[in-house]
Every structure is written in structure tokens, then in C-alpha cells.
Amino acid sequence: MSDVVTKAVAALNEKMDGAGFDGTAKFDIEDEGSIIIDGSGARAGDDDADVTLSASAETFQAILEGEQNATAAFMTGKLSVDGDMGLAMKLAGVLG
Image (cartoon, rainbow, N blue to C red; front, top):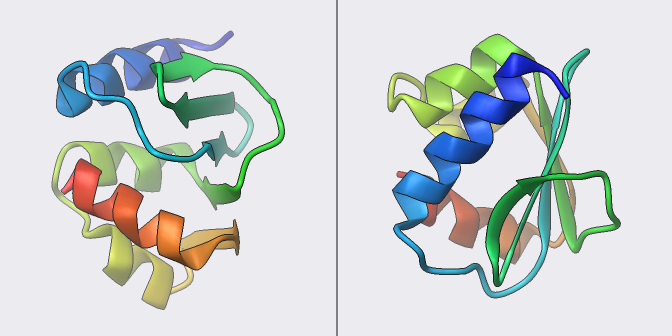
């Protein structure tokens, strides 16, 4: 597992503050690995999910740090979403 994924898992769990996520989402970070977010929080993994969000490590980092709005990243093609768009929007609210 890459340092990017390890740091992102820690940052996501901190942002969610112990609250799980209603559904299963996967962040696929190009050339780094994947993160699963579910009712237990965030963890490294490549399980099947209700929605998969794919982005470069730079874009994902910018979203986590609040420098990039997830919706704007999607609209400009920096973030792709495959699956349940409603869950993706809910996740954007958790991260925002």
C-alpha cells in the first residue's frame, strides 16, 4: 500500500469523525491504490462498491485538503464517478 493511500485513509477517518457512511464507496487513486469507505469508516481495499470515484493522487489530495471542490472536479473531468450518483453526492457532503 502506498503512502498516499495510507495518509488518505487517516485523513478520511478524521474527516468522518468516527461516523460511518451509509453505503459503500471506493476511491480509486491512479497509480496508488484504492480506498473503501463504508459503515466502518475508511480503509485500504479494492472491494466492490456502490459507487467508485476515480482521480489522480493530486486531485484526490486537493479534495481532501479542501483546495478542490469535489463537484467542480467532477464537472471539469478531474474526477470520474461510476455507479450510484446519489451516494457520490452524499460522500461529497461528508468530505466538504
